[in-house]
Length: 490
Image (tube, rainbow, N blue to C red; front, side, top):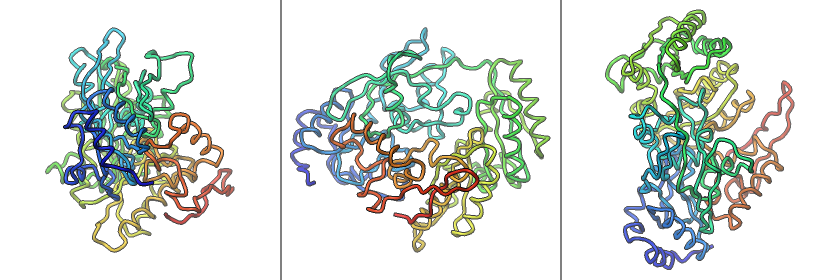
């Protein structure tokens, strides 16, 4: 369908402040991809609203002109969810950065979608509160994007992902209608449309005001760093800690490639370079509880084969141990200017087996892989390193990424833990779900967006995006589990 972009631009300039409309190609190139840079598409037109009213006006204008739209926050997503890969208006919420309400007696804060994740904690830290979800990109990613992707982070093991901390959403639907999802309290006798919206990746509308749950800052925090000669030993330590009934705030593993990248990035050896893996364990709570849990975790790590152990107690020391994990993606970027981050989930007990499979696949495809992941909940983030100048580099990278996801599914896992499906994995969704499941998802999407104009072509596989022979899951009995059939890449 051909759209009259000049007419749309004219109407948008009439409805919105002049600075809210971006039409020059040089400026639009800033939005040609999100954090996943394999594909780039420059949007034909963008708007930068500053209020719910602006967003509603823009979406009503899109409805009048029958123009699709794509929502974008800070652009840190890693699945191509904010990619405008077919003609659509880009709605950028980065100027919506106000704290709308702070209710400390009820431990809530309401913010616009462009508020940066770490700003929430900064706004309430002086009162002894914090916001738990903490993606690695928390100093740059926005709350609106976190809601769209249902982001997790280091602390998701104990405190859950974004959906566990959002109480209410003000949402602009694709026709420009403004509505509220959720009651603002933890439990309510209603259909959980709030939960359906979180993680919908911009396919149901745009959140313009988000009420978040705040937590009291813990009395005490300890961080343990254990290093191991094998990845299997590190995985056994994770299994032992959870089996013992301990519930760390977070457990993270980095492999040797990542360790050395981080040490090079810092210019000093924060982590032991010869270790096959390092395990970070954060324990929080009351001081006596943390002390006992930390001692027990140290014993379990030693029993699993830890070569060395460090424990940080001072907040600054804890931050130093976490700094490398938080900087891992940036550090790997110094090894090669281009890498591709995958995101899959496996049961904790299968971590050693799946990591060994990733190493075999790395050798098979001739592409190095750095592993850094949320070990406590089995959320893997393999970073596939490549040089874009090499022949067929992107095809080889995508093939390796697909093979890794197949291994995750074969282990009883998932093709995404927190990065979402977006454009990157939409053709893999039917590896996990059958036609009835996908149809049900499509019906929910249609209830919110009958015109299919919100982030078109994302998440669900379609003939347009995945080819006429869109892949289907074939039941292959192996070990009592259904496995995905062999497929070709699109």
